[in-house]
Length: 84
Image 1 (cartoon, one colour):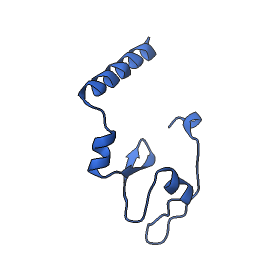
Image 2 (image 1 turned 30 degrees about the vertical axis):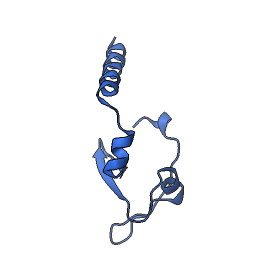
Image 3 (image 1 turned 90 degrees about the vertical axis):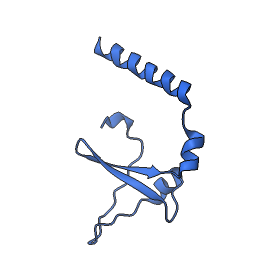
C-alpha cells in the first residue's frame, strides 16, 4: 500500500462476533446503505473493503470495449516507462 495515497482513515473495533461498523464518513463517501454488500479482499497483508454495486449500476458506469482497450494500452505504456 502506498502511504502517500491514504487520504482518510478511521479506527474501528471488531466485536466478539467478528463484526465491524463502517464509519458514517465512509458510508457517505461510497453511498453505502443498509443491506448493501461489500467484498473483503486480502491483498499483500492488507484487508480491502470494496463496495459491490448492482449489475445495472456497473453496466452504466463501465467502460465500453474501445475505452477498455485504450485504458489497457495506457496502463501498459505507463508500466513500460516505470521499468526504464
